[in-house]
Image (cartoon, rainbow, N blue to C red; front, side, top):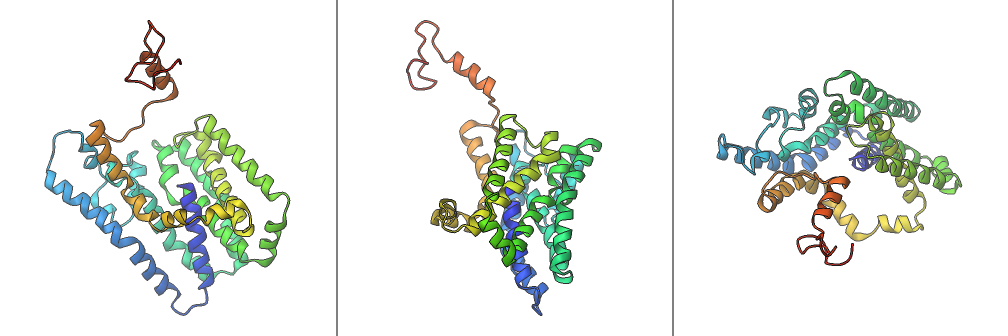
Length: 315
């Protein structure tokens, strides 16, 4: 999600900056956003609504994840379900749980165009930096003061604005000849990228998840900064192998369908889990549990792994 937000801020910010003087600035932007977002989102909502109406009030079953605990349905077409999620302390039903980020995006679209249109680039740059600094402060305050602070700090726009605004910052820097040359020729920039990659590795090593105070305080911001630096790196060093990877045709194709894939990945994953594993989508095997299961599958007599476990060879 952090990479998605950075890329979104970069693309939307760049579009708005390039069209700033257009006479139909707002009309074209919102028409394009509407036809890009709403049709497939409507399919997702109608599919969910049809399933819910067809099922009525079903007893708990392996498919109940798809229908149970949804936010009030009217919040979804209004793109305010993230506020209800933050208040309720739940993502709601799995079928629509991923739409919190779409609500964040839509709320971002309502604010950024006016800021870009009516402020100079220097003022815009100051506002972007202010928003990046303020986002982790908002997250920490909510994390410590709200009953469901970890979720509120994860799904609300002003708490995730740092990732989106890092993308806008990239768009501003790349449209400045001075800054784009500095980034392309600097010897310190690769070191900064590696340092941020090290921070991400440490967060992974210590198991900092979305419920962690470390992520709320600096983790999300450091990940957004990492992706922003990576974006600037590949855009200013076009002959570097990383830039070649970013231009790889399968990745570009995946990017073209990423929005639809993201919206439907939870329903599809959930149906597969329900049909094959007879339960809701869940990854519940930690390293200790995995080790325990591994030990149980080893035959005490021979020391070999049983056929139900891993390939039969000495552990």
